[in-house]
Amino acid sequence: MNIRKYRRLIMGRVEVEAFFKERQMWAEDLDMEAELEKFIESMHAGLRGSVPPESMRMIPTYLTVGEEFTTNDPVIVMDAGGTNFRICLTQFNEHGETEISQFRQATMPGSNGEISAKEFYGFIADQLAPFLKYSRKIGFCFSYACDMLPSHDGRLINFTKEIQIPEAIGTVVGEEIMKVLEERGHKTDDIHFVMLNDTVAALLGGFSGGGSKQYSGYAGIILGTGINSAYIEQNSNINKLEGKLNPLGNMIINMESGDYSVSSRSPIDIEIDKATNVPGAQLMEKMISGRYLGLQVLYAVREAVADANLFSDFFKENFAEVYDLESAELTEFVEEPYGPGILSQCCANELDRENLYYIIDNIFERAAMLVTVIVAGIHIQTGVGKNPVRPLAITMEGSTFYKANLLREKIKYHIQQFVNKKYGFYNEFLQVENANVIGSALAALMNE
Image (cartoon, rainbow, N blue to C red; front, side, top):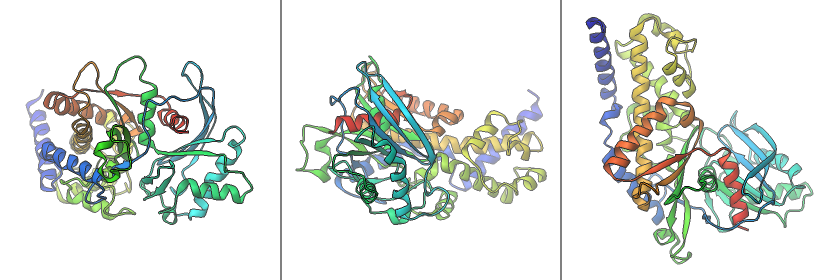
């Protein structure tokens, strides 16, 4: 390599490092050990009954795995995600194979501006009503925080991912849907309704799709528009339900890990948080999920353009016209820095491209390290995955994980170094087609 070009590369890295260090955002300065210790304490506090910001919610689901269920018995599955609302019919044949039919998809209500609770539940009833002639069993995969009830319904705690339906906060979701259906003349007393989080559904989908391989336990992680995780906890450790559960049993816990309060937040993280609809909530999500990675790069590059000598005048002029960034546009640049993407077109020369790459790389690196903290926390809390031939099965879901190749490889690297080598735990990522749909149908069938 030409010595002048090599010196320029090194200087670029040094200058970007100095830029991020000054803003308390340099990935290598993240103390994973200290963050893991704090994360596990947040888990314990949530199991005792604490709530954010003191801890993650650690929501008991009253669902577990391993129960028998009927075959050739259709279930209506609804899936309210960060972007789309989906509905379909799902059943399992006598061979355990999944059959999905009548699939429909619409934009998630509240994602394009604020709507009322009446509009929200009216929309769901509109989608659901035509399916009631096929089945009276409903599995509702709901991607937002709810206090789950022993009846398998859920009281809505909050919306994330910038969904705007504030009137619905505090309502019991299944009850409200049934009210609307009854108002429209539908009989509901024979409807069996089970609600679960998308991460819990992913875990159950992995349980169904594990094949003949033996696993020591199951977990689910969603890394898409948002971030969350779920795992199986011993009832004896769920102190907030002491005396209400069989202490010898277990239950899936929806951690709501996106609400974890990361100790190493930077001024840029704080600025992004203040500009969101719900400041102070979902602080980890705002540091690592697909909805916010683009914003982190946007804010960081704006500061670099204003305060650091990292970019050409051409870049500064063109980037001034960039008002929003999606995580997909970051991946587009990383994979095609000379391509037609919006970020590539801002660059005038090699130095622009190199420094922009370093900025994205650092933000992905920090996100990968925080995802690794979640994985390590689940291992340490459960003790599962000590045997390499019976690892912890982690169903990974979410577009950010599967489409952001650089981020995914960084996650795998840090898990190998921190979880496998340092702590001696083993896991395997499962990719299960239609995991949320399968898991939601299983939840309805296993909890009749």
